[in-house]
Length: 86
Ligand SMILES: [Zn+2]
Image 1 (cartoon, rainbow, N blue to C red):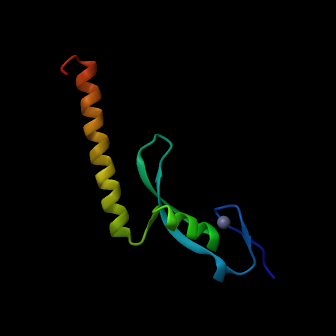
Image 2: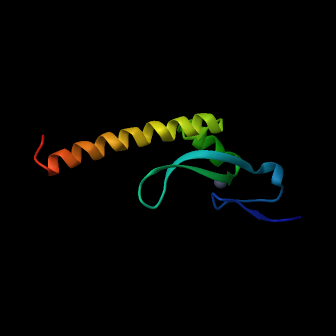
């Protein structure tokens, strides 16, 4: 019997009980990012209930693009404020 430690920190004894998911995340600079991780069933359920899971790479890619666009708008507003243009 093999012991498997998952990204969520929980242990399972069979890889059939491990689920690789894509979730909303940020990188170390706070930029929007997709996180690939392998978690146990209860953690997969929790991420899904919280609406944190992307079901397809396309969905993840589009969400990141939207988040980055919002980021750019925010950067522009902050930049204009700092320059006294707003
Ligand atoms: Zn877990």
